[in-house]
Image (cartoon, rainbow, N blue to C red):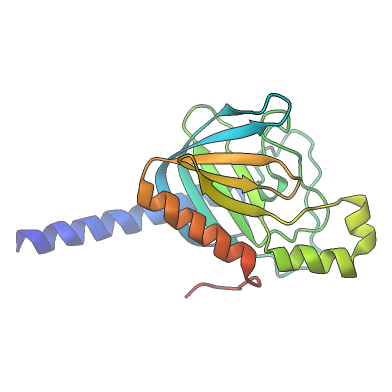
Length: 201
């Protein structure tokens, strides 16, 4: 009986955490549609090509990957004016610390965010299936020439999930739980290699 009560309490707590994370992410990215995965602790590194080494960034906290609602194809990302620094699709936060700001039509089907415990700025990255980027190069050549995006890539190496983003920047995400590290790698790989989905039932 005690075991069943403990399992029920753990399930209730997990549902509560997911709902809380969903609501918090919604403040930064109102297009969140479905939480796909979350893990309680992650840290971010950026590959410094000039010095050939990892640089630890000031981002630590809950990592979440989620589905975004981008059904309106005419939707354009808001301009960066400093007032809305945490828009996930914009690869958000301070571009000197985090990465190049994404602009143009919002094609970012998925988002990755780390809800930062160290300071108010969160780390975020738009995730786009490679098929969408390849179609964009063919069918929206003028937009691609104006704002070129590269296919993303992901691998696991040296305890890091290494992600090459749309602007060819390389980030390493250290995840506390080894099983979660593998799950996140496999999820991102799946999202990149398959056509975008409207829902994950």
